[in-house]
Length: 205
Image 1 (tube, rainbow, N blue to C red):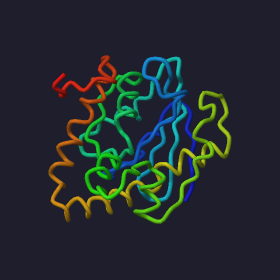
Image 2: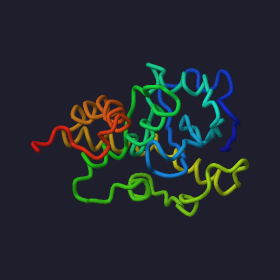
Image 3: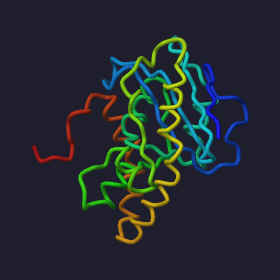
């Protein structure tokens, strides 16, 4: 198991033949339009993580963009709504197809209101994630070893979490509903970018 840091883009030929990758991102904050996208981390579920430290002057990352839009590779997120919106805003891509473990958790784990990545990962796969580097400077030129390890940890277990949640969704008869939510998620992210971030367009008022 290893973590790899790439400057600007993914290497050619990476992730060929896989049907799903776990994806997360690091930004300078959580506000669309203000805070830039800095790092994208990806894992094929094999114990390795690949981090792309983006060139924020151009966001020219053709291999990464090709992966995010590859129709045969599912992108697994936790709270994908934010990451997908950031990718649409800064990379100019519509990320599909997608799976969100936070949505799956909310549909399957109705016995709790704790659906953060740390809580879900602890229950589903018995791994206690550290969040010590969550609030740190992701825009700096040289990331620390601690930052790299933190970013990697957020994607290394999502395949296993997805498998456990899929079993629960099927057991509870909510797998079709979950798939419909995942299909809509990229459009919800685009609505966020377009200005409806804090508005529920389906609400009566």
